[in-house]
Amino acid sequence: MQAAARTIVRTRDAKMTDSSSGRPSPAGDLFCSPDTTADLLAGEQPTAELDRFLDHLDDIDREQRRAERYPSAFDGRYQMEQIEFAAPLVFELGNIRSLLANWAFVQSAMDINDPVYLMLDYTRVMMGFLLFHRSPATIEIIGLGGGSLAKYCYEYLPAASIRAVEIDPEVIAVGEQFCMPPECERFEIICGDGAEFVRRDARSCDIMLVDGFDTGGQSAQLCSSEFYRDCRSRLKAGGIFVANLCDLPWKHGANLTRLRECFEKVVVVPSEQGMNRIVFAFKDYPGHVDHGAIRQAARTLDQTHTMSFASLAEEIIGCLETSDDASFGRIDDDHDLRDYSPTGPVRANAPTGKDPGDTTGECLVLASPPARSATSIHRLR
Image (tube, rainbow, N blue to C red; front, top):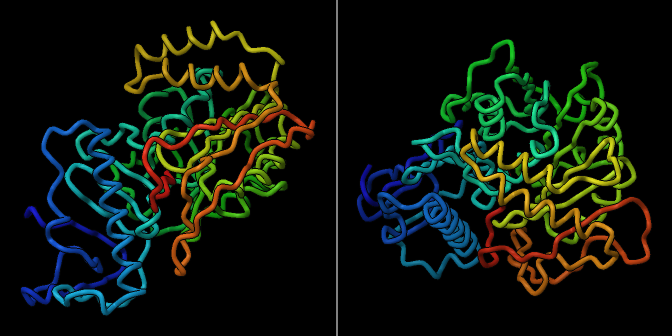
């Protein structure tokens, strides 16, 4: 691949004309200049490589929005055909292959050299259920995307049966490009609506991982009271519901209220990257968890897994230790938040979490700002 090239494989055709050469660009409908498209440095650490990748997409999204709003500001070297973004789009840069819903929404990211590795921090946080339930027999995943969670569970939990539900057949169709394991007795992919599946399918599961999004963001039907009740009914005794909440932070409060009404215990852990908040909702909660047992489980898991459960255990223990504190912090306090509408960024500092006077259920939101500055990249799955 040439230094200035990005590779895009998509389910529908789109073109961009590079007027400086008269040749179609391999970058599809991008609007960018060559000095922003250099390959990632060889040998970069995964975190640094991922940061460069996300910053790169952020630049593309910013330039596209600027081009749409101020077309006269560009010098004409690159002319972008105004066509609809054709999702799902597989975007490759350096060693990273990603699935995009649009330039602002990253659904999956995969290290081409290590397809099972969980690149996005929030996916590693979601695997924290293993600290409480180390040997699940059945795992259900609502929202397959590029299969990051499905691949990891398939590889590292060989005794578990995995059912993945994905509403978009075109997402399922690109599975081979993300090294998806073939369907077999212990791995099933179901094309259908996740909420409908949970409501109608007669089977049960130990763990339910919900990571369902579309081009508009968080799917409303996957964060309704009815859906949460159906999920709780579907879980076996001791089961755990884990969900990725990735939306503008002031929208989290209503979701958390609905979750607290359905589950014995709800804990929310922020990922280090972006606006993702991971919810752990327990069907049966003993009222006290042995922190030493969690740390021991982490040490045991670290012997066979490539991700660090020891550090994740400390994050979750921090949640459990402060879960009785009525003072809930502000999510992303003093950080700019962008509304991804065509009208451009909206700045806001909106509180969310549990009101001090609200005694309904238990819920913790950690007030931890993102590691990176505000960006237009949502880490979805």
